[in-house]
Every structure is written in C-alpha cells, then in structure tokens.
Image (cartoon, rainbow, N blue to C red; front, side):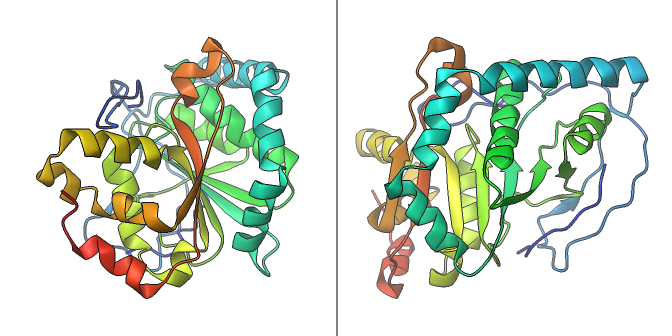
Length: 284
C-alpha cells in the first residue's frame, strides 16, 4: 500500500444506486515529460501513469484556464459556497478537523476521480470548490490530484492552479500517514472501499477526513438490495458506519446538484480494535 506520494508534476457522475457513475473517457492523449517522484512504497496493483492525451497547445490550455477561472469566480459568490464553507467552520465540524490535525499545522488534500475538467462542468465545480477551500483555510496544505482520464493539457492547468498530479494510480489506496483530507465526490464505491481497507487501523482512520458519497445512503441501499456479494465488496464501508460521524451538505440549488448531490463529510472515531474486526464478517 502506498504511503504518502509526493510529485512535482505537471467518469463521474449521476449518483446511481450502486454509486458507479463515471463520465465518458476522453479520446486521444499526448507526449510530454515532467519530473515525477515515485512513492516510497508502491502496491502491486498500482501502476505508473502518464497522460494518454498528450495533445497540447497554448490556445487549448488558455481556454481551459479561462473556464476554470470563470467557474471559480462564479462559485465563490454563490449561496452554496457560503453555506459549504460556513458549515466547515461550525463548532461541531471544526473541532473534528482540529482533532484530525492534532499537532500538525497542515492537512494535505488528495483528490481522486475528478474526471475531465476540460469536458464537463461538474468536475470543474468540484475542483473549484477544493481550490476555494484551500484559499479560505490556511490549515489546508497541498492538493494532489489523480484521475486516469486527465489529459496533458488538464495536467498543466492543474499545476498552474497550484495542484500536483500524481504519477501513480494509487487505486484509492493512499495510507493516511499524516492528516489527510480525501476529496472524492461521486467516485465509484470501489475507491471508497480501497481507501478504507488501506487505512483499516485505529491510528490511520483517525488521521483522515473523507468528503464524498454518503455512507448513510449506501447503508440504506444495502438494506434494501440484500445482495451478499455486493455487501461483501462494501464491507469496510458498512462496518465504518458504527464509528463514523457523517455531515450531509446541502446543494441549495439545481446548479450544483449534479456536482455535489448525495455528498457528505465523514469523520472516523473514536474507534476500538473490536470495531475494526466487524469488517471480517459478511454484512448480508
């Protein structure tokens, strides 16, 4: 399993019952070389990655940067953004962020499954919100991003916006060796399961914060579907419900429904070793 992955570099969603909503993959991709730092430890199922769409040009890059700046400026002046950032500063949530931070000054942010910011508005809104969060809160540190559909142009724009693009497909298995916020709205359930499995220890779970699809909704779906195969493939998600606190966000208007509906903050703890053993048993 990968520990912290440092880089220099540089399919998403309509929420369905099973959380699998991936935007169409984009076509042709490019050749561009930038220095990468490889993770200290790489899991066997992780793969070195470079963009396949390597077609670049100043006009394409400038157009995408303009799209992102417009999106950021539009989002920051909305009621949704004010409510979202205000919720993060509410006493009940802020004290949980402080607890995760512990003695550290910064909490890194890892964005998985962002999709194509060049082709679709929901990924642009999601990235814009992550950038605005970092601008608002000085305790949010670097932002690392990965999605296999990212093009070279998108990678360069992400870098210009102050983000790093990972050179390894971690399959969601980043270990929280230090305080880490995982920003994963509308990712596939497999990524959430991989993340929890990779951090299924008391000290690691209490070092991570997850923003993504509601675990409450997943539990409700599983109670209806009663499919043991699906339940066993979500066993860490379901087991985490016993020691997790979830805070739903309000999308406020239809403008942000596609990008953020069904999303929540998830905090883990207090946790006992007995809680962790629950994932060893079938849930349905």
